[in-house]
Every structure is written in structure tokens, then in C-alpha cells.
Length: 228
Image (cartoon, rainbow, N blue to C red; front, top):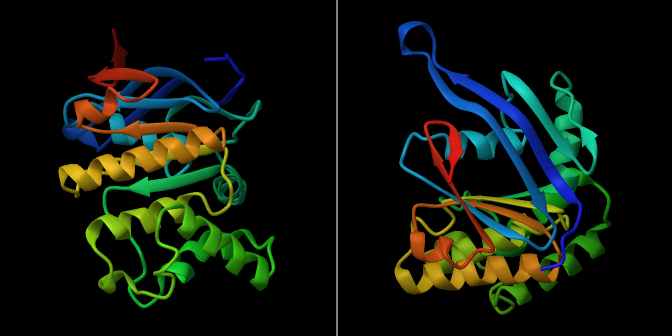
């Protein structure tokens, strides 16, 4: 694989969870580089810090120490508005539970990140949404609500939604954890294929070692640190 400049980096990330005697050192000085077109997996036992790392990198939480760098620029700790803008512009999320809004159609759910970013017109958002749902094999189910879709189809809508704003970084927390084997492989292959085609940096947190083995790089975490 051609080595490219890292689009997302973290240096010395530290994070504590809880208070008093229950205070836990969840991340202990984590360093990481993510590059475009590379799919990385983080594996490890429950409670080792995998999801905590993902939420920090996704700017959904704040670190206690250390630095996060997106596209060469350090992310300030104390500017919520900038965090929101960076998430909209650079980061797509896929979670174990699809979190689709039940009253909205598949197309409307995919359009939500575009509406938040506020760059495209109504026509452009509709065209982009249809294009993404075609890519995930749901072009004939644009108007269906989540309750009218199977579990695998709902997660494919979630994948399409994560790609809505053409993010440079895709973060996935157990994206196949709620699916059977066939749908797990389908969703993972789709996620990895689309991300590689669009040269996104992908980080997947998973307990599924078979799926992790398909990634370009597997990082094992124990007690808040990466280990060999």
C-alpha cells in the first residue's frame, strides 16, 4: 500500500472515567496515525478503552491530556462549535445500533448529516442520498421507513448516512455486532470497499476477529494502551 500522510493523528491521549475511588485510567498515552485508504481495526477485551478512544477521536468527548490532529491541524479542547463543524466536515460514524429515526424514510435518514452541514441544495441532497443508497444496494427502498427494512438493510442505510458528507475519516463502533454472520460480512465488506474506493481513513472497533483480520492493520488494546 502506498504510504500517505495521516489525516487523523493522536498523541499521548489520556482519559479518566468516573470519580473518587471508582476513577479509572481508561486511556494511558495512546498514539495513533490513520491514513486515507487504510482500514484499521482495534480489538481487545471489554473495558480496555477501545470505544473511549473512538469517541475521543470522533470529538464526541474530550481527552484529559494529549492532542488530536485532523488534516495537520490540532483540534482545540475548548471550542464546541469547532468540534461540531469538524465532525460534520471530516468524520462519519457507524455504530452497533443503527440509530435511524423511525419516522423518516431511508432517504431522509441519509440526508440528515447533509442538512446539518448545510452546503447542498434540496435537489443536491436528494441526488446524493439516492446515489449512496444505490451504492449500498437499497436503491429500490428509498422511501421505506426503518421498520420496513431488515436489520442488515437498516445498517446499510447507516453506512450510507455515514458517507453523506464525503468524510475523510470513518469511525465504526461494533458496526456488525447486532447482525448475523451473513449480514455482518456484507456490511463490513461494503464499508471497507466504499471507504477504500473513496480514500477514507477507517477505524473499526470490533470483537469479531474474523472481520478484523480483513483489515489492513489490526491494533490490539489492553488496559488503555496498544500492545504488540
